[in-house]
Amino acid sequence: MFKSKWRKLGMVAGLSISLLAAAGCGQNDTANNGEEDQASSTGNVGEQVEFTITGIEPGAGITQATDKALTEYENLSGWEQQKASTGAMLTELGDAIDNEEPIVVAGWTPHYMFAKWDLKYLKDPKNVYGDVEHISTIARKGLKEEMPEAHTILDRFQWEPADMEEVMLAAQDSSFEEAAQQWIDKNQDTVAKWTEGVEPVDGTPIELVLTPWDTERSSAHVVKIVLEEQGFDVTLTPVDPSVMFQAIATGDGDASLAPWMPATHGAFYEKFKGEFVDLGENLVGAKIGLVVPKYMDIDSIEDLEPAQ
Ligand code: PBE
Image (cartoon, rainbow, N blue to C red):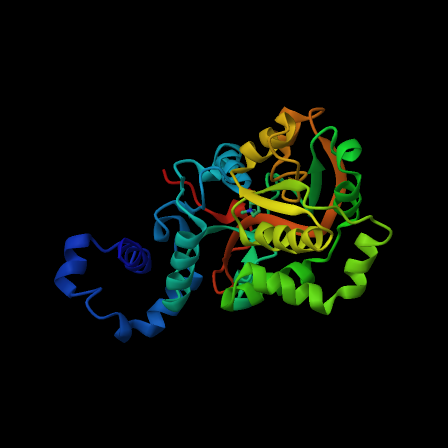
């Protein structure tokens, strides 16, 4: 509602609000199709989105990166990040797209948002959001010695963004348990490579710590089933990224497949560096950044206008 007010103000820049009201503008959205198209491609995007970036959960790495972008980009002076939840961000993005309105969100890949809608990353000349990310596997100190079977499987676990997307997509219509099982059934050869020569165990408990996003639900559920088939009793514990590193550093959790590196969780990684073991990448080709619908006529974060 506020956004459409700003859209109209952007469209008819120069007219006063009272004149707008007198002219009855904004009363009938559907009669304004031509002008709306114009509003999508011209005008002050900052005003149209109320100088607000639609972010996600306060504890996310991308939320930290966006706070950093707000200080590093001079042209974002006076902008704010709205922090709520991934669900709320996706709802707002979907609503904006239904109405062909401008919106700037904190987005990432892999995610179905890019399959569902025509979106683009804004260029990030100051490289606040980093470049290509990888997702790492980390383990608590001592895991290798105490649970060598689990350690071997965790160390070998590696897949492609397309695999992760397949599980994420299938889980939309079922559950992560079912989607992960389906993926495993279809990829027996890959799974066999992860478990080759590993001795079965008898109910050894193991706790995997993950972060609360679908990317990590996918990897955690796949590895959970693989470890269970090997005889482990697996617990999955979702926490914020900062707590994930802390849990592995203190030994409260055994391992995590969830750190996005080097940019997204780099600050947490550095904070706990030396207190956990890095088993290397489990996926290459992730990305975070500011994302807009393709119909918006901007290409770079630097194309956003300051609030003053
Ligand atoms: N994400 C998805 C998370 C990591 C995985 C990009 C939203 C974040 O911490 O930003």
